[in-house]
Image 1 (cartoon, rainbow, N blue to C red):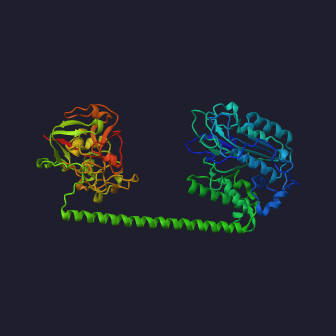
Image 2: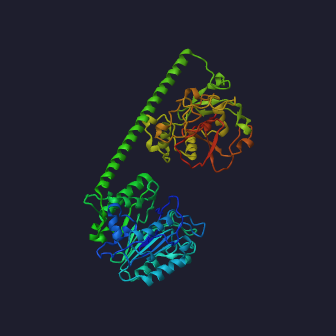
Image 3: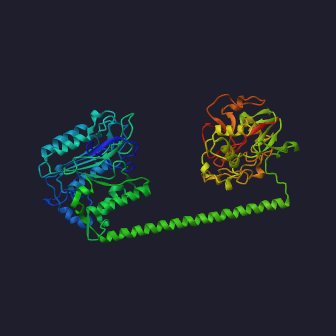
Length: 634
């Protein structure tokens, strides 16, 4: 909410503050037309609280206190009510509810607060120019206000900060935040009002001055600013300020109540729901406590933000006025509110139990399906049926290609013999010939990587603190960047495979789509994100290496599709397949991204294709990227 520079000191901050941001239907804009109804006011008792008068302005005392409201008069009070929804400059965002709010306040000032119609000036949209501001604040009020007068000023529209001086401004209909000369300084407003001969001034500002979207705008190139409440005029002065939120919060609209969130609960409080002691009277303290709690709770639970109403100059400065009666309470409304809250909580508890029941049923169903799958696998194994699951004949690797040796790091490596294979897919499909090489049978595990860390003192991978060697030792290491992967492979006496080597090791020579053939992926063949809902749940998210025996490649390399992406040596080139050599193609000499292959637990089924590829910044550490090493066959 807004403050003047003497009430609010602007200081650069990263905090978020905004005004009302909801979009709601708008009523036709009023511009001072004669829609007020006549009344027969009586003189106001001197002992009536200013805060009570303010609340009467909003029409908050209703129902059981309508008779008292009708008798309430302020014949010497004056009000300037401003609401700007649409600005002349189209680049300035529309302000939801501003004109509506101003119209409602202006009417209630006459019908509920007893201010004569001639003493109220309603300025909306094009009738609220900078000239109008000056005329009514410095001229119209000064010529009319008497020593016994109470002055009300209401503004709903955009505020803006000056990023150079920190001063706050109201934005008139014809103003623009880039040109301070066309704005109205809040400092001037407060100084002008303070000099009026009246006894009290009540200012209601439904605006903010941080520059964050909402009821605030910002000069081009400026950064949002935060607000802190410091005003030497308030203690002992004639100014009282009612604010729907602190200076670093958003004042929210509440669609469910078709009001601002603050006003919604202020209305409820003054109708009787805040009568905590059930004495038939709602006091200022009861109202403030009720509104503060209800607004904060609803803002957090339903709008996912913080909002805490404030009354300035503050509860301690108000003293005995905190017990001022504001309206007649109705204990029945209080009891109804308690009952509604009990029903709401019961409904929430029931919904939570229903959700839990559905989850249990889904888990039971999943378990039954998994048992059925396992039983079906056993039946197939027992009957020894040779079921063709691929759309092409499975690759039949010659016996000598199954040859396997142990690498320097103790990890098994499998031979990929020399020869030609089909690389790429679609328009990029072409024949490539490679020399023989070895590639790790499995992705590098956390156990093997832990030995590398202990020997080299290299920086720990991302999420390494979640590794349990007892339970995760055979799961692939993740959270390493390309430089980590390259360093590990060199430490073991190996190297990263080239992109062409990786693809041949994954698909063999028959141009199959996946390591296991052409059958589309399923959770029985790979660890991947089949429904787009997976998130990291610790190292149990990745499967132990070799968990999908039936999905291994023609050369017995496991997990070449899914589980974790695997770094390869090449720089990424989107047109690689169009220009790569056909004999032992090497990586491009430069680039911005390195190639990762094979898809992962976080990737969809299309990323599991053996020809699939992605470019990743070499410095990135991700819980979905690991490594597999290769070595020459000599």
